[in-house]
Amino acid sequence: MKGQFPQFDPGAKVDYKAIWETSLFVFDTNVLLNLYRYQTSTRDQLLDILSKLSDRIWIPHHVALEFQRNRFTVLADQ
Image (tube, rainbow, N blue to C red; front, side, top):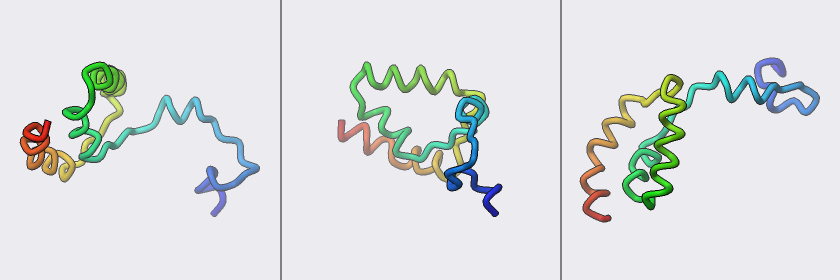
């Protein structure tokens, strides 16, 4: 069982560089909606990071649905 969860084994060697280079990034709705809430410089930095990770990003269908349902409300609040 320990081999399946090496992050919980203090003696395990973890290659964090490999993890960052191969991980799949999954964002929730708030990350996407916050793009409307951030200051311009912060939003631009996040969009730059997202573009660099674009081949390793997955947006679940429900996240996209929630984004579409809530984006006009968030825009109106801004």
